[in-house]
Image 1 (cartoon, helix red, strand yellow):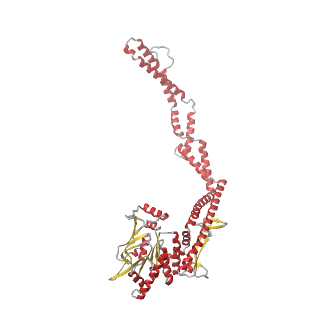
Image 2 (image 1 turned 120 degrees about the vertical axis):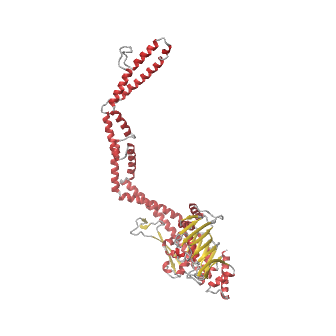
Image 3 (image 1 turned 90 degrees about the horizontal axis):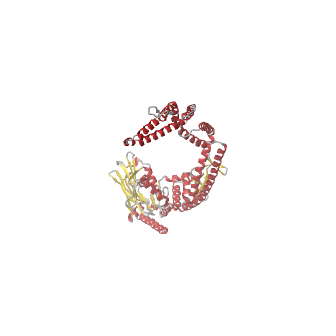
Length: 592
């Protein structure tokens, strides 16, 4: 609910504050006093485009501040409000209300704040969208658009339409995805077939070599080793001979030819003596002999393991060349080649263009089309049922708005696909345009009297009739949307007499479930208000200034009399005003 608004430097208003309450609030004032600036302010708070021409002459900027109370907003609207506040980092005021601020500089620059945080103007639109609906003087023209007419039907029967609409949208996405994939596969079959052949050829080349992980690194080390084979063998043989020697014919130190034999001779000589100090060295020489024997054995094994095949190096070099042929084409090393092959196999599965694969895609697309066609039919049926009920309800309201036996017809038609439609939907043998909201278009048609033929509302309704149709529509739709603030700027334009009284009645009725703010020039409408605000203008030395104040008691009688063709200073005018107020009070009692 909108609790308060403050306006500075906007149009003819230098500074004004207005408080709003539950029920019906009317804003009146003389022509040119600035009544519509209230609506302009609400448009700005709703994120509308800023117009520097609206800034008061001589002012640096216009400032509009609104205080919104959201305690009574629940359900989906409450969740939407909470989400916007959280994402913007906005803070609530101490009393839980939310402050919305919009400034417009004389240079055209605009700033927006939500809950003390600077935000883009679009965020204000997101915040106020669930809370505030503003109908400007030309907003009734929206009723002439087919999409708005369809949206009105969907709002009217939200519970009956939301589920089939959501189901249609879900199935439509799946159908378009399957259809797009089928088209891509079919149109690119030659290109995909060529890619598949290339992948198969390259995988065959890799599989023929059959590289193993890390094989290229291991071969480099082995090739280096085999390249030094003669040197390694000579070194190992010489070392082994030095340690274990050839056959020894004598046991003297002079004749011994191996380290083992020499160490044995040294140990025998030491152990043959009687000196205890030399005897202690014997075990240590025994350990040395054992170590040398172990090393000699390992050298023997090393020599045994050295390749004896002189062609081993050539085989390794040949294998290395095969691996290099792969690493030159596919990756820097063998591990990369193996990874490339794995990816290629996955791509090959995806670009399968066999007849079986295409047939499977075609079946999936056909099944998806049948499913979305069925969902579209159910959605159309739900809309048609809702359209009939909406037409009946609005027609009843029109009768109460002094439009005699005027009748609103609401037609739901399926949209036949055009030549430029890229994705026509086959529904019962007819190709239809499958939009995001279904295959339907809605048209409002108005018959001016009982025997008249209904015509599109844009051709059959005058400005005043269009205003009343819009009001009747809002009254009917209000039953499905409670709690929002609704603003009407001269919805009674082009209306007078008994029709004006009936408009006042309908607005008062609408205000039982909504906060309603109406800018009006008709006393018959203003009399039904729970709160009456007037915009006064003063001319101070050629400078026009306006302010907003609340009326009560005698002041309200005077204002209503003024609105009755300027009869504020006559007894007749006052009597007529009091009569209107009494009529409104009686109506209020009936609504309770």
